[in-house]
Length: 335
Image (tube, rainbow, N blue to C red; front, side, top):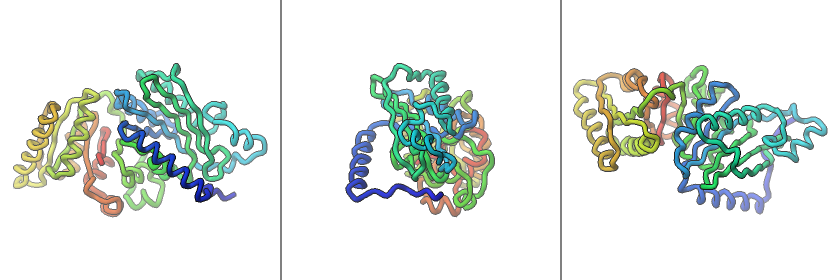
């Protein structure tokens, strides 16, 4: 059986777009994190990271599991029940449901216990699949939202990117892939992490097992876009109580003064913002290799490829892409 997106009338489409516009307006002043899990224990590190980054009441945390379209659910009474009930509340144990419930336990371990919060369940049609999309939203008395989202999509990467469009989100958190491919192979093949980090409009954190480390290792090359990334990352580090280290790399000894100036300017920017800098460092060598080597000591390496278009990142890659791929700690690609 072939599954296709549901076709809406012009009136229905207009109503949907109006609703989305209203939601985006309401969410504009909130920091929204999308933590993606894939059913493995290792992927739950995204939920732990999200919990530790969403320490303020203006932070909303959405845990997403994308399940492929499943023709195996096309069976009599089950199909009717799926169409009527929210999977996250009805007790169906199809892929994703138990994993999202496990995410709630992880959040509880991290100090976010939603058991006493009011909740609302929603289900919507998706791709003609009997399970559809399912959402369970918990909201605290202070207005903070924790959402479990079971999304149906043709493939996981596009499901994540589609979910961004329903957000929007400030940050997407993904787990480390089991193996990396080149950008073209990622885009046309099955490289979920590569596709999302290449195509996502917002910042992306590739989370590795670095939660016991300390510090944001923020890299800068002195450009205006890089300085914007420094500002955003430093604000996040300050909010969650992580020390800030500023780092710049010169590709030759002749370029070292420019690297030192980039770090000094970034430190001055943060001083004006009343954000303390714990350390500044400069190195000479291959930028990606130096960042990966020195940054391994820290909880999060911060890079940016905001100056590159999605097509440029896809075709040529970037220093940020190489760092994300080779790092031995978590990497935040700021956009």
